[in-house]
Image (cartoon, rainbow, N blue to C red; front, side, top):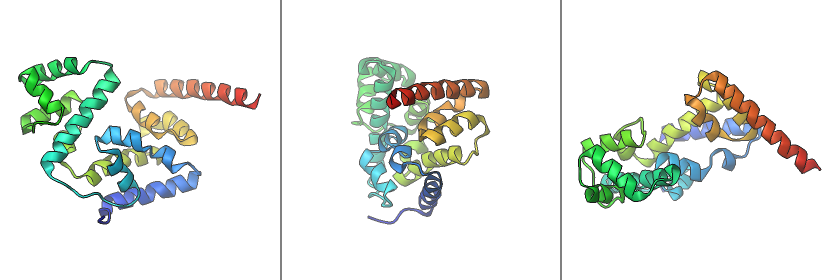
Length: 205
């Protein structure tokens, strides 16, 4: 497999240095399943990239359709909605038939640029169309950049949660807290500390 692009290689080097400095578990901090869900990449792609190898780029059409399908599957699992309900919501949003929406969400049809823009908004993807079209290394590097920023304390709003997460190796929890106010983050961190403390006490008995 080809070598990683410089940007991702540098991010991984900085992450590994940070992980080594804190004595954290790399596999726990960089959870393949969680990263795959957040990037709409396959777990094998994420695993290869984290190991220092870049998978074959493949066709852009396949990339786009695969990521739409992955986002749809993750959204259905996370929201608890039925696939048919999501199809109807997407059909209404894109002003298309439910059957065409189903074909798009299953990755069987290629969406056009306006539809991709709407799908990005529907699934809450801030990067827009490029989330679907960028190479896997670029998409993962963007996500790992957020992880690194949290670990290095570059995001002021995440202070309490990042401190908690770094200590316990739960990076994704801290990053998902970026919409909380500092007071709510601090309250959440205190609550979680209390719960973990109870577990520790029971383990010592």
